[in-house]
Length: 305
Image (cartoon, rainbow, N blue to C red; front, side, top):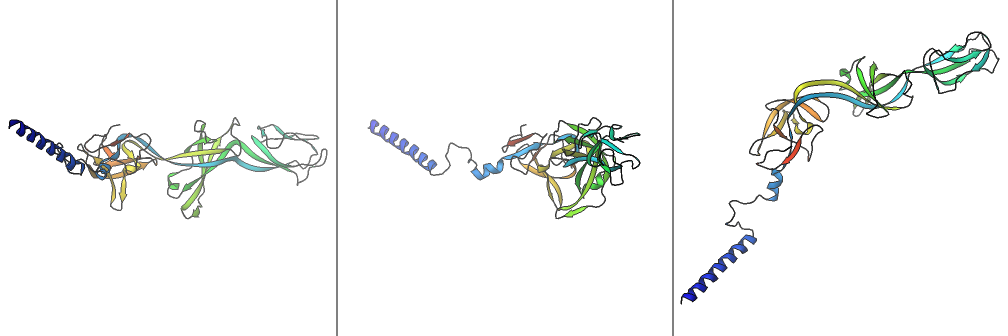
């Protein structure tokens, strides 16, 4: 009798365990779990890419490419009282100041008034008289110029005499200091807005910069020191203002109003109810900016750098 009861209890226990397993496979909650697991949509919502609010210095700049040219062109007249003997240099080669350009059959030769390149010439045959038709077309190269197109939003921030970083040949390791020479007061309009030509002067005493080289220019238009900064993608802007989503200790987020300031296009200055070290949510998938710490965190976990 006791054996029969024992077997019955074993069968009942096996059936109960089997029932629990079948119910769990069918999607029901199991008694071994304290709470339901989050569904995929919930997990996606809990994942967020963050960056750390940092304190530092930020600069805003106008940048753009340009083609290098000589700083001036001129037509040098030959002495009409003389007879031509020889054109001394070759075309399109650098001639230093006071080097001979034209030799006459008698008298002083024509010398270069500054470092230049002769790009075109019209001279008589040897021992023939010089007339008003004869000349040398030259380009000055002891200083060079390069133009950059600046938008109407930034043109008021640029002044004559302002320092400019010029990367020659697009090489960021070959940067010379230039100066804003002039600002064209007449803009060129298109669908994206008006552009104004800013001419930058570059020293070229050693002749290492050649006509026609490419350049990348960078002009500082603003600076903020010892300020709070975040990636641009952390800031949400509407007609009501700007906000950032700050991650709390429990993983939830709170929208906080901020005021934006200087930006370099990647990082932006902010002020408001935020502090250094706060974690803010980026509004782009995987979107972090250079110089900022970013991490992907789950709900209830602190952001890691």
